[in-house]
Length: 95
View (cartoon, rainbow, N blue to C red):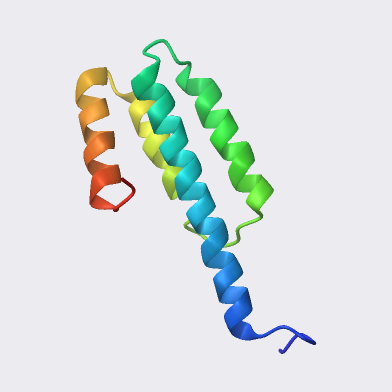
């Protein structure tokens, strides 16, 4: 189905732009965790989830970035969890 006046490439560009904004927001959340040791991770997760909903991203993988924060929250050893989070972000080319 073609939309009047909308190029399919424009749609793909907008979708990728939204995904990049979500990744940038995850990086901001990470920086808050690093900078302020007493940052409430539950509040960061809520904030990131609201941001994802605001972007109106569709698809089954829209919560991948949210899972990274939840994994950090559920870890018993926070220093190890921070290393895993840092390495994961680095591997994904977010730095």
